[in-house]
Image (cartoon, rainbow, N blue to C red; front, side, top):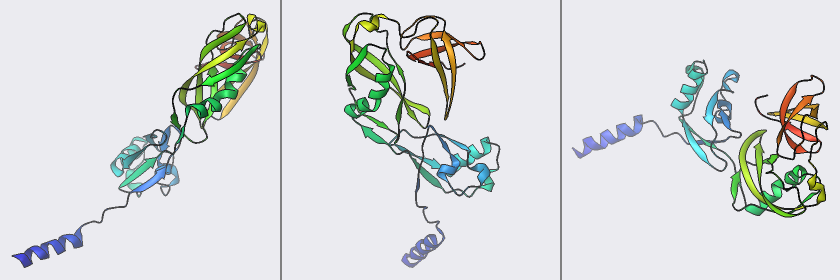
Length: 246
């Protein structure tokens, strides 16, 4: 009986399929593509969407069955791809302290302030793990008092990764206001540069303000070339960013 059991174990060891080593692939952006997980797949399968990327600094396992389902959903035959049993998708991340985050967005906040306003201090109360290469995007200011003096403001800053909004950060700013802040940042009839960000492309045009307003406010502008009226958020005396959906 002992000899029989020994032979059974030997047989199982001979026919058992060895466990596949777990593969790890780095991914970036908001969505993963099959070509990032399995670089050897055919060219027409490289861009198949496999789902959301893990958060920066995190990872998750993607099974062969999951990859095959996504290939089928994209209209391809899963049998055309040689896929591993499992792939660990890893999103590299950098943990930044509150002081580092404040330094990252300082220049963008300073550019967004109206004439006559000087940034005194900027602080973030927490750390954050972000994708490498993240940058500051659109800054949204609250209404700024029309009086001189020091004021504390909560400022919202979009953090961009590969042209997409990856996080919205709130920073606390202490701003010194001069008598110039009694004026509106953009006055009715003033000409500004309108910009629209579409992933990696930036579209710009000249426009005339149809009302007066301050940094952070959304105003109506008439585009010089097309005479079309659009809505844009004021960034500075000479710049406004077109709101989404236009």
